[in-house]
Image (cartoon, rainbow, N blue to C red; front, side, top):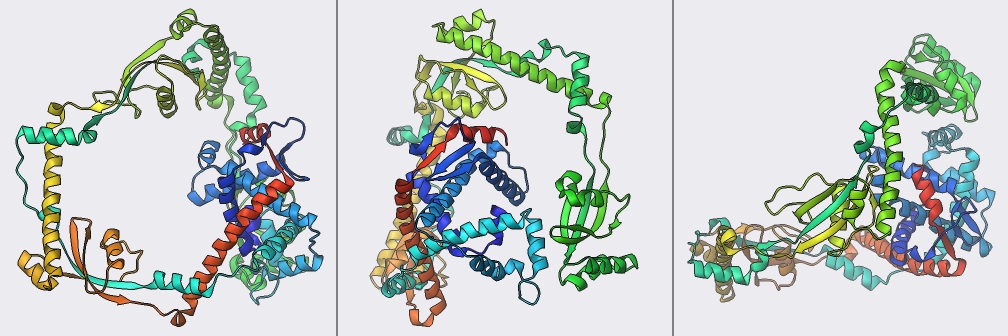
Length: 623
């Protein structure tokens, strides 16, 4: 569907749909969760269903698109951390809600409307700017979409667009509001300034211990030692049982035979193609290439477009009708035209990489390790069940570990970051982030449930004690206290100088004379808008709160800055029609988004939404 959305021009709907995801985040779907075991659906929206197949396809496609964008494979763990399962589900629910409402209101999409939308799509236009059937079929082929499926999806999108367009059509922000926002955004101010850099301040001598101790007592929160917890835990992992597992030679051979494809690296070919409307046109181009002409040049002249790269693919990745042809040649080159439902394909094989077929002896160690781990995981589950039974029956963690001959590990002290009091890392830990989170969420004296890690391991912990966070002893942090005291004093002196300079400016002296007397250099600033960050956001904010000719003092990147506002450039909306139009458009979108958020809430109440979490979990487990 993401490929489809990349093809279909539906600017307004896309903007609104982006806001829909945010709106779902606001009003959530938690109250709609249900368990559903009968139908292969992940959600029901009114009379419509979102099937497992659709959700699986959308999730897979979304993960693939993100993988291509970031240049690395997105696995389910990363997808979960990014919230992709929820976003995909919310997008599908949004589509169904709007479609359900549109249908109940009797809205329809005619064949003429579908045809006009296809003809109007820039992705389907040829060099002459008109609809190009060959380009249309080629684009759908690249997106791995059938024409029937594309038309059905486009019809549904146009139906949704009728409703969403009608909803926001009457919204128009007042001209006064638009002009006011433009003036605020476009206004510029210019100032000159001097900066009192902390690095140039004379170093302040350290005071006596009494002064430092008083400073330490007043700022003790800056010298805190974190809370530490002592923890006992049992950690079970497949690796612990690997040496106890024996694998029969016949089992290894059977695994190799039954899953040979898993150990075979298939042949791949780097391909590009051109698609022609007729057999005659494709064969004419093929004959020119066979006669010695350049493939890319011939394709460009005959189709008015460059060859389409198909990338480096395995045979199974191609449509069935193209597989035998594309992988039938023994060497790179241009292949004879072959017909599909999209037209006649003229394919060029750029490169061939032979597949690898390792023999049994080569992959035997890998198979043995996999089978051992599989059996170890199975055995581990049995042990975990026994441990669960013992703890559930009232046994303490120590008693259960002793009875089952499991190692009880102890950590004398660890903080939330996994660090011991001496600053060293506490290792090893099972799934450190998960473990530490559980260690600090479990009450002192209590033990956790038996929890599974992402590496097929398990752990259960008990919090034996806690040392609350407290200030480190003064003697241990005396040097740190001294440095912070000096820094505070230097900052105070710098600000004292800045206040004195501003007082002189307020009394009528010029910035140049004040700076010269203080040994500072005047910087002549350039006009800036209110969102500028240079020389500092604090100074820009102060300048936009000041009147022309007045002085301000604000924090700078290296110390306080004293500035004089020299000029205010007030914009005229009548002289910037494009900028004003852009502000009007952005404001309209925000207003429509707010309205659409309210409308979606009403649709959810009217049609009802049920989400079947058990089905979602099953789909995600299979990806």
